Image 1 (cartoon, one colour):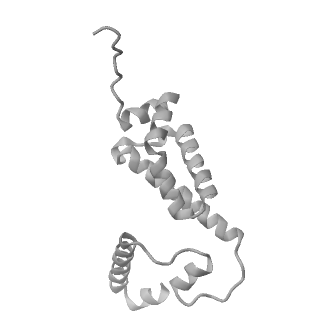
Image 2 (tube, one colour; image 1 turned 90 degrees about the horizontal axis):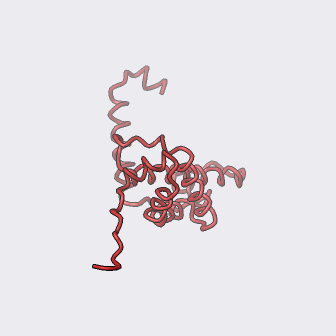
Image 3 (cartoon, one colour; image 1 turned 180 degrees about the vertical axis):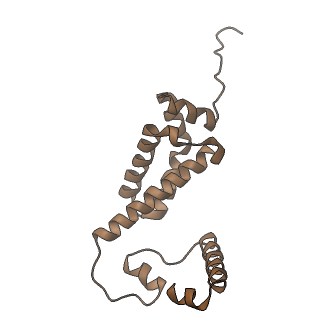
Length: 154
């Protein structure tokens, strides 16, 4: 076979994260190429504005570059780490924007009204609704285990 070029074996995400921690720019570019579209979709779903989603995505990858050593392989896959980082930064951005445009309004009567007051879609996704219900059950179970005096304090 003349003229055939050897193909490089693709690195998995774990190898790429280790390489990024050592300052490997090509590994960083590869992670970006693999995962940026997913991270952008997550950002856009949370902040709902393209320009904000682009800024959050940029912040996420800048943080990855500067602090790649924070990734702990034993705690989950690199993509899960990126998703959590992206979600946290997007929620931070959303909260920041809500504080910036806060207006004195009557106290909302329900969570739906509170979401509507800040311009967030109040309809939870099925996973969110399930997690909320599970949280409610756990809170009620915890409250049931308290004495009357403790319950009153809470």
